[in-house]
Amino acid sequence: MNRRLVFATIAVVLLTTVAGCSALFGGVSDEQLDQEQDYSDLRDSDADVAIEVEDGSVIESGEFRAVYDLNGTEELSLYRSALFHDEPLEINSVRYWHPNGTELTGSELEVDQSRSETTVQVPDGNGTLAFSGDAGRKTFQLPAYVEGSYEVTLPEGHRTTNFLFGDASPNGYEREIVDDRERLYWDELDSTVSLRYYLTRDIPLFLGLVGAAILLGGIGIGYYYRQVKQLQEQREEFGLDVDTDDDSDGGPPGFP
Image 1 (spheres, rainbow, N blue to C red):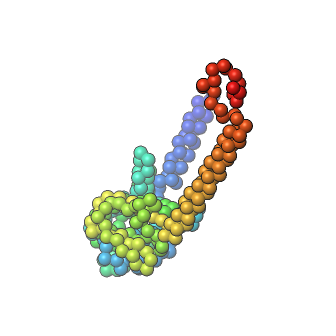
Image 2 (image 1 turned 60 degrees about the horizontal axis):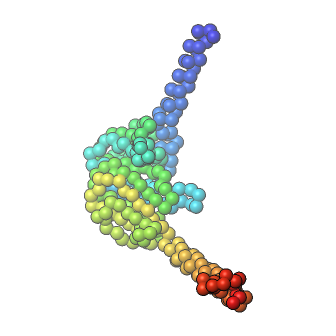
Image 3 (image 1 turned 30 degrees about the horizontal axis):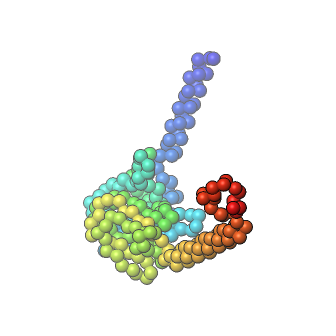
């Protein structure tokens, strides 16, 4: 093969690979960063970090909104832990407020994305940063990117209290119900928030299904036992269950 053709092919492959990596890890689009979102309720929280989780549909994941009082932090590295590695947190609707209240949209900030994290740089570490992202289906997990107090509000009608269907970690939180929404509060948090929650109206439905399964199972066992007893009685009537251990003359069962 022509040597020039080989070099040209290699160059095209390298350029394509570099371009693909740039597209994947070069950052988040301005359109995604500037999506509309309302954070006014979360900004009113007394916690350093206020997070609200919204439930999704049967086939779609939920969403979360988060507001961070940066307290001297000028750069946040946002990630989620996956199996054997970290992956960048996909964010949208990014907003930043200077201490004087001036607002910047996400496209006005320095936002970069690599293979393992999404980095957001802000002009003043004493401001407030907000962003949104995807939550799991009936689950939520997010590292504590800044230390401080955390407040997490679950979707309406959902709880973490049933040990079979719900869980909240780390421990040491305060729990309250506000407008049918469970709210968890940590005075100080420096580890990953991990929640598993359920819809309260699903518990009676689950218990009803379990009760129906037990009832049907009991009926089936009773019917089977009755059939076995009837078969045993029929065998005894025809002399098919006569014990032959004591037959000394070796005659067939039922005969002297």
